[in-house]
Length: 590
Image 1 (cartoon, rainbow, N blue to C red):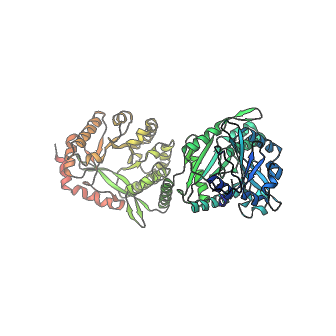
Image 2: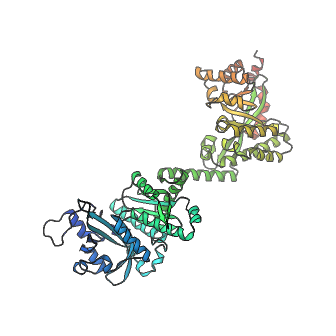
Image 3: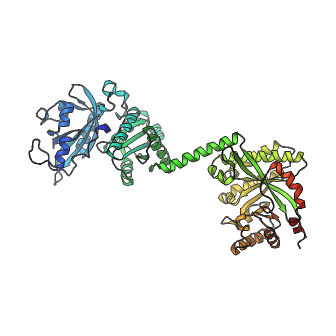
């Protein structure tokens, strides 16, 4: 845990090392000797009893001591001491005794005689028989990050409870780590780590024991890290890992498994799990504060997935989410600034030649992109609360339009599409009743609701309950796009809808595609068997109309009858419809 600007190559020794480099050797140096001599970090080699055998030049430069001055002594003898109280010193000695690898914050006396914070990593090297051969100690100078840290109180940069770097120091460490990663082309992982349900644990154990638990937790995680990794505490039970090496799923699985092991605090075995969010630089190529934010986002995603797991931040997905957020924000602006409007497509009874209603279809009069169709913006708000906002807007506008047409002597029902998200909220019918109450002059029978079959399929019981409440208000219900769901027959039996709309994707090609014709025939047969009125969408030609009527479907809408139109164009269209001899001729068919 040391300055990225001082990050050396991989630790020059590992547990398998059994050759201790000898200073002054004239022979060609091995890679281990080269790393030892030229590492930027101070390296101390001690014997099985932790007494100094050798030190590298970086140690001499950092401490102002020579090999002769420290040889045969323990690190404590030349003032490498634990930063905290006696309890921490005891834990350090226990860790040194029990573990082959440990890591501790210490203070050390520098060449100027002053004490500075450092991080001491100890690797125990064993011989072939498993006995202790020697120790390799790496001493990292924490005061070098930032450069002016030695002139400030330690509390400014370190957490008082755990002794770990705090958020202020971590922020600077991340920035310097980014610079180092850019220079060296090395990976960097920023990990947000949050103890699961810690508040509950803390309330059960008490604050004092909770603090002890946090300190012990910090010690445990710190021991699992490599020499130049950073563990910081940024608040309560929130920690951040800064990892300067490649990581994969296996690394984090091992980390989580180690954390799951019980911790014994004052005789109690306590089990902890964590949620871990990871972002990888330079794949996530943003500044330090954003890296932390992205790691946090990934951590919350891990919690959503059930805790005790890890989740990688996906920059590409995040960009898509940002775009969607911007699109939704722009849609909110459109709602607030009256950029939306309703178009209306007539629905007719072909057998009688009469207009029986209109379907309200939303359009967006975009100031830059012109008139946008629903397919160009509705996917942006899919499954969000904006669907409810839009649904209420459409219902209000439809009721207002009914009132305006009624003043003109036009009494024609309006059908409004209701999204699954909107239909299935618990207070849908109550809110609909409130909107209807605002237009007492409009009969509820003049308002029809069209519900996608997928909405009913999602939760049949909730849909059934709301549909029945709406019908009790006098509002009619239609199933839209019927036939596209996988359980249409079940819905036809269960849902007390007033109208079934045959999906246009089947109607449009029914004359040329035998499969589509078979589907249309089946839907019409089922609807008639269950005594349900039906309306065909996508009717584009008289040939479609005649084929549908022959099969027993008499209600229709589609481009052959009329395209969707603004409200002020409908009165003119209504006046001309009786003059459409081609369509009126259908009334003469047997």
